[in-house]
Length: 578
Image (cartoon, rainbow, N blue to C red; front, side, top):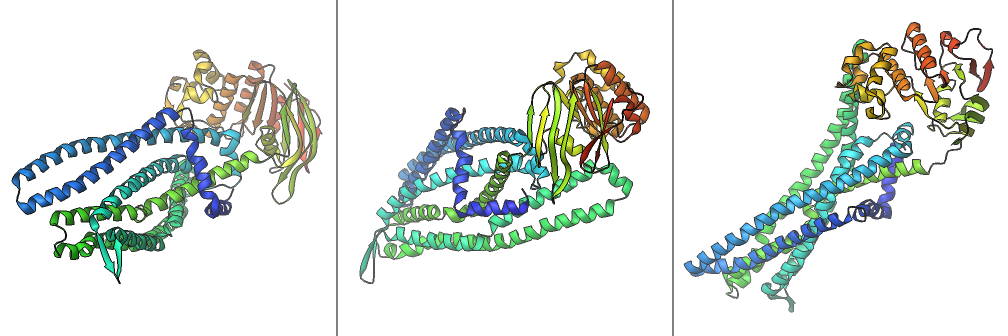
């Protein structure tokens, strides 16, 4: 899925599907095996949120008594109210601390559950591989790390904030309606006029805030992608540091990094402009809100209809109602970020779903003890065919070498056998039994050398002494003392040593079928001969299917098949085979 397709998916969500998809992203956790503790935590947190609103309501009532005590210079009442305030404040502080703590606990538990599910889904159906091959370039690692973290924390924050806002709005609207009295406008008496003033003030403010800040959603989405692309470019330099250094490619890489950072800078500059305008508005809106209730309530105060305490109570209640109505304004930046994060997550999930629903036109299944290709066709983009109606049988125990010009389809044929290629037609019947693929560039995970050798299994599967034996056999005796050393072995070892580690892995795994794709390209012929001989000696029943160019490989294979013009051609048997 390319970026244009991703943006199309994002636009689709904005046309009515967004909230439905977000709902399906949110709800599974609350019905999962963790639902009991999740709901208990959520209910407790909501209760603490409501308690915080209750404290605010109490303080609003306290304002009236407190300012009246000040106006009347009543020291006894003043002292009583101060002690009363200290007690409530202590409880409120404790509730606030545990509200934060339990919210964080719920957030990390939800994030953990979501992350584990997305890890499993990303690695299932070869999504991690097919998305890269299909052109999905928008940093899946960031979706699984930063976006899931941001999504869970922002969602809880917004939901709890909305609950608090609604409860506070109802509570203080009742208070404000009761204390604000009525006002006559053009002969019409308006009850609870302060409430209507707060509603009008916040409504106009919310509408203006949306007009000013609506571009933040798209800009935030772009910023995340540009930042991730820049990090990825720097990681690529680290991964290929030696090649870049030998090419003297520093100037070129500097231009690449600078051009990527220019996108970061340019987009951030636009975000700054929008946020500056939004900050101008929200700051001014907040400052006017401080004096607005005094201005509106002043006529009743100066006419003697209300006392100072009631004026301050009106101001406090108006402030709370206005803040509740203005929740959208205060949360706009958070909402914009949440929408952008949700769009990226949904696009990523849509890309995985698209891959999972894709039906391969190549039939692949495991049965029997013979490898069979029947009328297999392999297609490339642009209507180019690599193979056309190819058929071949390879029996258990055979050693077969597959050769052909570069780009003829040798590696693609192996991908089709591994279930990684779905463009084409025909049938691949893979034999039952243990199998292992050795690609030209082996994967060496970061960890101990013992873990690297035992991949994709774990070290405890094999006898401890066996690791040293296979290293000796594969001419890696110098690595035996480092078996329990943790390192980035793909950087530490030379390409030839990495390929010998892959052969040691094959000897440990002892497969029935071994597929080798240029697996000795970085070795000299002496090492190549020694390692192939080790496979034949230590794995006497193994079936070998080797892709290679060197004529020196022929003596280790009884059959030689060559790809020519999109067809498999059986070659004469070499005179000397082992």
